[in-house]
Length: 454
Image (cartoon, rainbow, N blue to C red; front, side, top):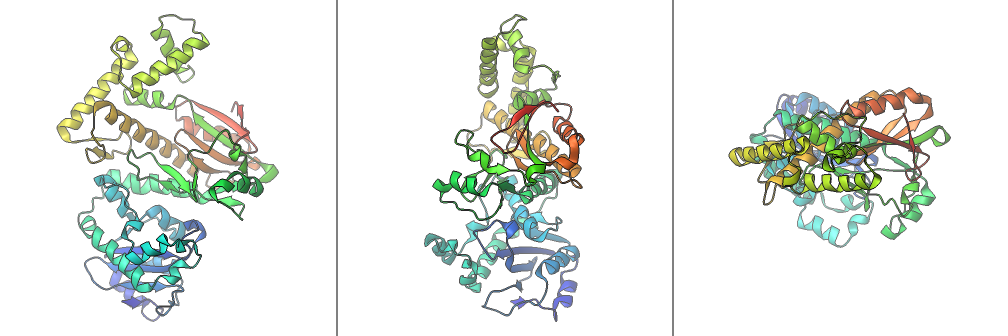
C-alpha cells in the first residue's frame, strides 16, 4: 500500500502512463448526494499489478495526502491508457473528467442485474448499515481503512475478467457517453424547492430538508433499460399529481423564472411508427387517425376517441388482434414483432433501435414476441428521449435555463426569462425532432402548469 503525496506523485504518474487503471472512491458523507460530497479516500491500481495506491483526504488510519485530490485524479486519467470506474455517473459528480469507462455497463450488457458497489460491502459495512449507523455524517471515517481497502480489493477481483475482455464497441460508447453523461448533467442541475412546502409534503417519508435545492439520481441499469429516478426516499419519476407535493418544486430564478414541461403526445405510437417506417402526420391526432379506420367513418366523437385509445393500447401492448390486421399500421406492427422475434430466436439477441444495445435472453425472463417488443419499445423510448435531451443540454450550455428533470415521456426545464421566447421555441423543436408531437405547459411550480402554444 502506498499513500500518494507530493514527494512520490511524479514517479507514480510515470508508472501509470499508458497503462490501464481501476479507480474507486469513498465519499465523506453517505447521506448526501454525490454532487454535494467530497472524496474521503481514493483507491487505484494498475491493471495486473498488486500494488494499491491511496489518496487520503481525512481518514485517521494512515497519513494524509498533501495533494489536491481532484487535480491528481484528473492527471491520473489523462496519463493512463484507460481508466475504469464503478458508476461513471456518480464519478462525474465528484471528479468531472468524462474520459473514464464504467464497469457497471459491462454487467448491464451481459444481463447481470442490480450490481452496484454496495454488493462488495464487507461484513463490517453491512453491520454498520444494519445498525443504521450509516445515517451518521462521519460513518466512513468510523469504518476502518482496512475495511475500505478490503471492499476495493473485492471490486478489483470481481471486475478483473471484465477489464481483460473489455469491448469498446459502439453500443458501449453510447451507453458510457450520451446516456450516462446526459443524465449526470440533468442531475447536476438539481431541482429548486419551496422549503416549507417541500418539508410539509414529504414529512410522512421522514424527510426534512434544509437546502433550497434537491438532487435526483437516475438508475440506467434497469431490466428494460428505462431509467428509474429516486433519491432520499423520493421517487422523482412518479411524483404524485394529486396530493400537492409538486407545488414544492419551483424555479431557481424566482420572479424571473418559470418551469416549462414538454410532454410527448402519444409517444409510444409515434415511436412505433418510426420503428416500422410508417409515416404519420404530426399535426394529426393519431388516435383520431386510427379511430377512422377502426370504426370506418370520418366523423369521430369523443367517445370514439376514448375507445380508439383503448383499442390501440390493447393492440400494441397485448397482441395485434386479427380483426385489425387489415389496418396498415397494425399490419406493419405485427410484421415487425414477428421479424424481431424470429431474429431473436435465430441469433439469441436483438439490437435496440438507436444505440444498438444487445438484448439477449439474459435480459428477458421467459421471453415471448410481445415481451420482446415491449423491451424494444421501452429502449427506443429511452434512446430517442435521451438523445434529444443531450441536444437540449448542448443548446442551453451558454444560457441560464436548464433541464432539471426527465420522466420517460417528458422533460422539465427551469426557464429564465432573460433567455426569451426564442429559447423555448428551439427547445421544443429539438424535442419534436421532426417525428414526435409535444404539448408544452408552463407555470410557477411543477403542479400549477397551464397549456401554452409555443
